[in-house]
Amino acid sequence: MISVTYFGTHNFSAAILETLIKDGDFKIQTVITQPDRAVGRKKEMQKSPVKLLAEKYNLKIEQPETLKKYSITNKTDINIVCQYGMLIPNSILESAQDGSINVHTSLLPKYRGASPIQTALINGDQETGVTIMQMDEKMDHGPILSQEKIAITPNDTYFTLSDKMTSIAAPQLIQTVKNFINKKITPQAQNHDEATFCKELTRTDGEINWQKNATETYNLYRGLTPWPGIWTLWQNKRLKLLDIQPSIEKIKTGTIINNNGHLLAGCANNTAIEITKLQLEGKKPMNAKEFINGFIK
Image (cartoon, rainbow, N blue to C red; front, top):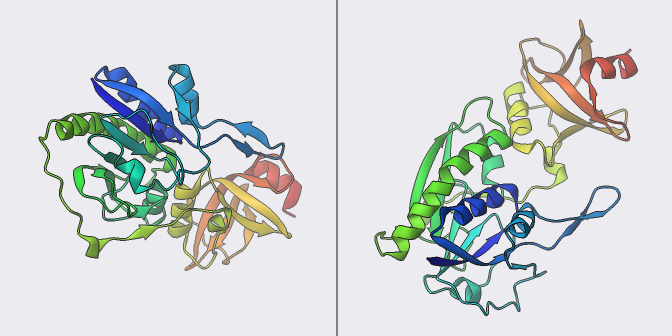
């Protein structure tokens, strides 16, 4: 039985944790996840997906605001980190007998950082993957233990690509940890000269630049839906585009028009997108027909 301290927060991380729990060869001693956060207009406290899963299986949960003065008293064989979202000091990384490993959703050294899935989609990449790596004090810098490649289809979104990665990453992690613990893997240093980086996303990253073409705008939608979402300004209000697709029509850049019942927006180089679902600031989500009837003259 391999004892584990698990660090994670988001949906992908929760799916990976559940696979470890069900495998039978792992004992999850402690789950460390981010504190509950106030969300929405009503500022209701929301538990992380990892916390909800840990509660389901009656696991020990800790939610420190910071790890600067945090220490792990219950030592385990290994620390596993997956979409935790907070900096982990070296003292904690080295606290387990076999150190700490990370499940990273890119083919390192490409896309080190907080948004590798989103960035691959935004950039229109045709391939990505999952890297299991040893952790050191630098972000996504440590030696690689295993990698699995994943094809990205033209219509993949953050949701579909995350699902693909889960189905591959879970068995990959289990096999990698077992081989690593049993000294059957030789860690391979990354080529740091080839490293690229991606940033933590904010709402401003979703603002549409109409000087980019329809493919680039659609890729932005693929990467940033559902959060932070893509948006533009309409009559001085934020207009969030909830569902779009490229169009073969050609209209003026930056304009939004009714084209025989189809809501189109003009992008660069005589390209356009069709908007099928959207939400105007202060209004409920609506389909294209509802928006045309209410706001397009």
